[in-house]
Amino acid sequence: MKNLKEVEKLVSYTKLAWDRKLTESTGGNMSLRIGEEIYITPTYFVKHFLTVDDTSIINFKGEKVQNKKVKFSSEYKMHLRLYKERKDIKSIFHAHPRYSLILAISNEKLNIRYFPESIESLSSITYIPYHMPGTDEFADSFIEGAKKGSNVFILKNHGVTVCGSSIEAAFATLENLETCCFAWVTMKLLKEKPSLISEEDAKILLRSIEGSQNY
Ligand SMILES: [Zn+2]
Image (cartoon, rainbow, N blue to C red; front, side, top):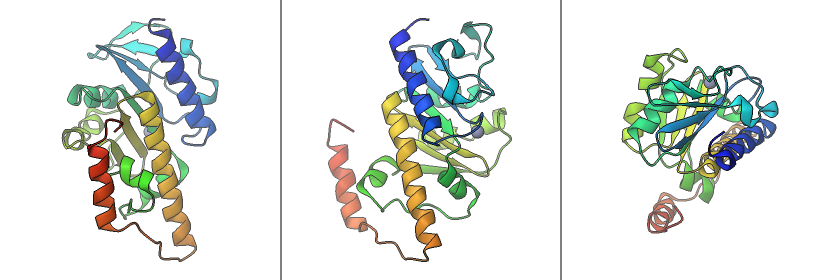
């Protein structure tokens, strides 16, 4: 396998996502872009058991260029659309995290001003109406949000998709989203009004990140 170290990292973070309940059963698909090739997880696979040999390399036409035996994710079109639209995206995690799924079936939008981390990583959420998974219509529904710079997509009655400039960034955004949704759901159950970081402080935080090289 080409780029073995990077693919091993994709496998490790995919397994970590499953082990930390950021996706479940055979759900979710993760990918990494290196140059003109996409490394992607297989379809219908419990990610805890994932190995490098289970991943596929595909090109931007959706053709497999390596590992012919493995059936790659049926959601590949979504990955290709996002990579095509945004050169800065290097990794994509599509998943079904428990608390984020509650947001996906809710008619509410998430207030992200709970924690600095949620403001930092969730500042551009796009909410996408339900579309049949795996279809062109589903994949095309990401284009508008991607153009606006969204890295976080809440998919109605389905799950979430997050994008990052690295595997670590995509994973961190996925986990930040789930933590924020956990806080949102728990405060609802407690019937408590959450304390929020003020809009002014949120703006200051976002401005400081924009000026930082680490962002
Ligand atoms: Zn899904």
